[in-house]
Image (cartoon, rainbow, N blue to C red; front, side, top):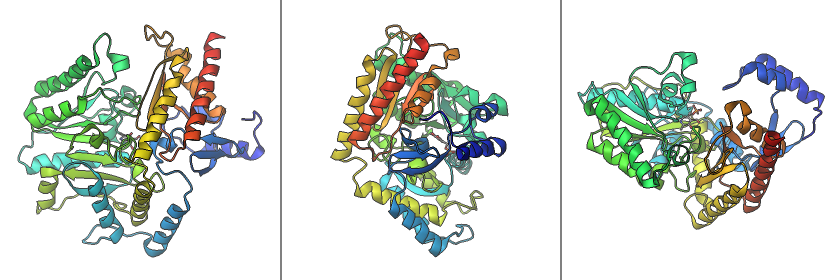
Length: 459
Ligand SMILES: Cc1ncc(COP(=O)(O)O)c(C=O)c1O
């Protein structure tokens, strides 16, 4: 990337810094350094106002499965806008796009999912599910079941309930969170960080036992639901040890607690299966989803309800007093249907050709293990992580003050790859359409970024 920016870029950065309040941002800092202005995207690449092409190793924000700028998506959205730019799903009305999408989601989800409620963002889906779980236990005459168990390192969104469910404690103090009735169990099932001298099996059992201990501490009859991302995303791309999810499911069933998988990242092909729950062989009562549902072409999220939860709410004669103006927006539903059609038609999920790509990604990522800064690489489906350490043997980390993950992220972006950092962990989540050559490009730039980062810290 060039050092000198064009006048247009500088003017855009100034406008952005002056008027736009960014999410998750140290605001004075973005005014100092200037935002990267992205103006176009095509396939697996984004393009900035300086004409730089950057491989999008984060699929937007874990969002884009099918690649950007696809003409048939554009056509679908435009056609639907011409036909039915908007209509609501309140007051005994509906439309073909929403009912067809609800059926399609049920076809793809694991287990006994029966009903789908729509919203716009992952956080809204999480807030909705939380309310519906409370409603369910009220309908079941168990109004005392109002405690929710989440986990350390979990990310579930930014609204008041969703942020409270987050186990990333930095999310809480600015907003006087968490709200009451939410418990975070630790440790996160992150073997590299938390496993110590234990075998993976012992560590798995310890994490599961911690959940059961928390249930017993709260009182099993007070616990409404256990929520977890099948693979933790924003907390550091943490796939759980083998056997973790079936054991968690068994505990939930033993105590009559609802199992809620938050699949905002893992849904729609990210792990190699349609859903993370299918990948790990569990059948949740609730699945929240967003992102890959439309590949980000439209804002849309959904709450999928199964079993008795779905039946009880759907057969109650009471009016369910919950919903949004944009619940089941026709244009967003049409985009989701086309996105799913593309995922199916191009064999991007659960097919031998996709499995080959996943193996290629995993092997390519593993070649970085010999780098002096890399303590571990891990991947599941097309999700990857690189742990940056000071000492490979002891797993000692660089201090926060070193800001090493951020440095690596900047080197990566400046050399043509979007790679995100969560502390000292570098994260990758490329679009599912990434080609073998692009995987090679991704790893080459990631290595270069690690080399430059090493130079920064060794001088
Ligand atoms: C697991 C999970 N749940 C919920 C959310 C919140 O989604 P949104 O940012 O669309 O509100 C996210 C966002 O990354 C997520 O990863």
